Length: 402
Ligand code: NAD
Image 1 (tube, rainbow, N blue to C red):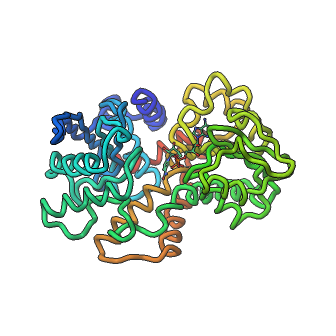
Image 2: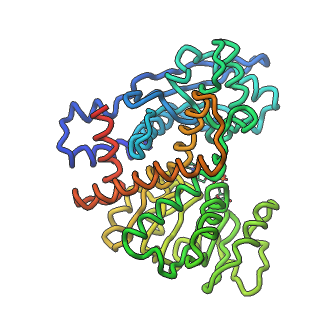
Image 3: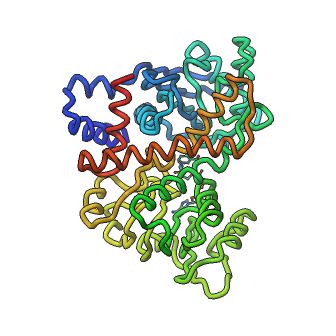
C-alpha cells in the first residue's frame, strides 16, 4: 500500500517536473510515534501514530484497532490523508494511528482502557492545533468520547476539538453519518453535469451496502429520480433487475441486518456477490473493499464510469487498462472525502463553541467538495492526465505552496 501511494504521488510529481529532492520531501513522514500499551491484565499491545504532514493544518486521520495494523500501512494511510485533505482544499494535514489488537477478543472495559492509554502515550503530540484523530476500522464515537475525556483530564482542554467523530451528545457533528455517501453523490453528479449527462436516464450498480453505500443510494433517490439502480451487492449476493430495483425494500432488509442472498423481491434476480463487477451499467459504484477490481476481473467491467467510494477499490495495476477502454475512474481521494470534510467541520464547530443543524453542515460539505471536483476536472483537461493524477497534482501544488 505504501508503494502504491508513493507511485501515485511520484506520477503526479513527475508531471509537475519536481526534483527527486522535492519528491522525497513530499513523501517524508514528519513524525513517527511507536509505543507500547500495557494493559492491567498484563497484555502488551503495539501502538502507532504516524504524522505525515502538518504543512496545511493539524494532522488529521483515523485510529484503527486491528490485529493486522503495521507501521508501513499506517504510514501509507497517513500520507494519503495529507493528499486527500489537500485535494479537497481543507486546512488540515495528514496522520493515521493504530493499535495492534482484535477488539472482538476484548471486554468493553479493556477497549476503554486501550483508548485512554493510547491518549496517555501520545498526549503531548495531540491537540486541536496539533493532531486531531478520528474513528477508523473498529473504532467508533463511543471510543472517541473516551479519548476526548482522557485528553481533557490530562490537559484541561474543554473545546473537545482534540478528536472528531464524537457522539452528537459529546460535541459530534450532525451530518457525519451521511457525509461520505452524500459527498460521493455530489462528486459524481458534478462530473455528470459537466459531461452534459446528468439529466439522462442513467443506470447504477453498487458494490457494498454499508454506511457509505446506503447514503449514496438515499441521496440519489432523493435528488435524481432519472437515475436508476439496477444492482446492489453485499458479501452474500448481488440483487439485479434490469428495469430497476426497489431500493427502499433492499435498504430496509440491510437495516434489519438481513442478507441479500435471502432477498425475495418480485422479479429481481439474486446472483453471486462478485457478479456485480461485470454488469452492464453506466456507473459502477465501489463502496465495499480495496482491490475489488483487479487483474483477475478487470476485463469483465462493462460500466463507462467507476466511482471509488471505498479506499483503493480499483487496483492501481489495472487503471491504465480500464482507461484505455474509455472507462473513467472517479478517484477515492476526492470521491470519498465527504467524511473527512465533515470531520473538519466538526472541529470548526468545537473551536467556535457551535453546533450547526444538519442542513448547514451538508451545505458546507457541498461548498467544499463541488469546487474540489471542478478543480480536479480542470487540471485533468489542462494537463491531459486522468482524474486521479489530476487530484494528486492539485494536492501537491497546495502542499508545496503551504
Ligand atoms: P461498512 O462496514 O458499513 O460496509 C461495508 C459493506 O461492504 C457491507 O455492506 C458489507 O456487506 C459489504 N461487503 C463486504 N464484502 C463484500 C463483497 N465481497 N462484496 C460486496 N459487498 C461486500 O463500511 P462503510 O463505512 O460503508 O465503508 C465502505 C468502504 O468505504 C470501506 O472501504 C471504507 O474504508 C471506505 N470509507 C468509508 C468512509 C466512511 O465515512 N464510512 C470514508 C472513507 C472511506
